[in-house]
Image (tube, rainbow, N blue to C red; front, side):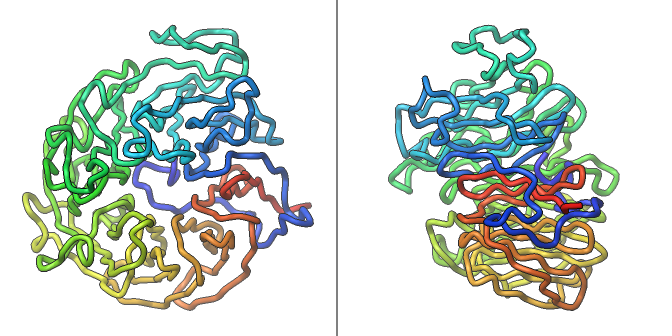
Length: 445
């Protein structure tokens, strides 16, 4: 899954990853595969395959060339295209399904099942083999296309039809699993007036049975207080002896729930009480990170809103009720708006903001250790692995820095187009999706 583990901490124990590469000369480039013209979903590697969300501009199926959301599956060893899952655009247009934005969520793979959220607000369970195995798995048997290059749908949960969600511009939630349950943000939000909330009673978070797709629990603590949209993803882990699902929501509050039942345990306001939307009050697009019985998260806004003041917090999730004051461990206010997710290792937090600054903070105190300016907007999150970390930016540069309390820049490589997604390590290979290509990078022996 995105982040590697349910706690969403962007840290890997993998070693031997490349420190430098050149996509022009092919140095340390194992293979390259074409994506669509806009790619926001993070690659996920499992079962000898690489899965990534994009749009339909790559045209892997010449019979279906319309604008659509696409999940692509490639062979991990050489990047050969295997199959795709295509979701038609919604007839309502950009208010719900912005043109050419494709699939923005990252998939979750467990065994032979893949789960992801389409551009149509559908939670999908797929067989990772597609129809290449000649079988139509699961209760869903109505696939319109069943060639070896098509997806095999096991079950589908339509959040618009089943729970009444009204997504703003796009559905974007990367599923996370615990036990038999899949947890998903519904992306419920405002309409195109940016004032009205058409579905104030729709839940903000749902839990589905991973085998059947049935709704197990839902929560709508946000109600009609959505500032814009809801695009955070959930994290899951044991906090204070209780397995919790933690998610940032569209009113700027972080909330924690009992994973199995959906009982709300606590909520934390990530904005100062005197903040005003949209100038100084933010929503939560970043995914929370669970680390040593704490929750770490920063707030921000849709990148279309530009830059502005942000906040980053360490929260004590063992408290109960409104823990805005009682659960505050520390607050770092020298950060700009952020949609990125933190990486935490050896007592240090690495968190980028949308303005392009990487902040290295002490995980216990929030004291700043150093700040690095990438000189470009940052949509992606930092990957920490092998004593270094990687971060892509909108200019297409990926900076590599040494981990630690002193700032050491090891290199910076350009990918040829914007990098909106997070670098992903798997089996000694670094996978990076640019706006229109997927790169597999490895040390050349």
